[in-house]
Length: 148
Image 1 (tube, one colour):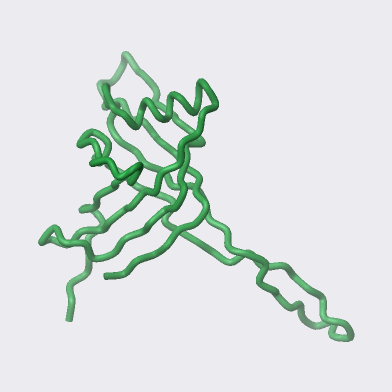
Image 2 (cartoon, rainbow, N blue to C red):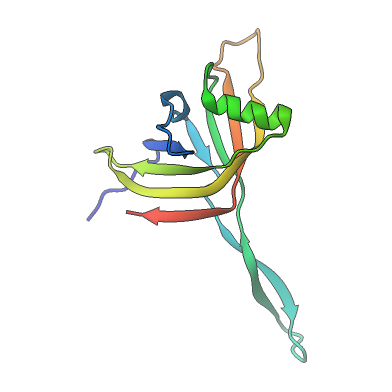
């Protein structure tokens, strides 16, 4: 019997142009948006007033949300900045891997043609010392779930 996998060991890799990922851009403290669902459309069946059919309409998913402490000198920040200030888009495939205690992948999610849609920085406060966190949000065309 296998042991449960903890969600605290993971890797995020941006696969863009065959380049080796920058070590600054693989470290994230949280990953969200690992979900996909079938969108349905209700259809009232003729002559049957006691129920409604639910027909599959398409696949929908939310955005991939990545959180990390603020980083200076990151190529990923440059890409986000180009998108947000110049409206210049460059897509990349993003691989999120869940790692076991032996640091080997147990599961993965591949996000195809991802591009930035939101960039937020946590509030600044002179009252409490706290880590400044950037939240990077990406839309994508398709998610492929991989189980090892």
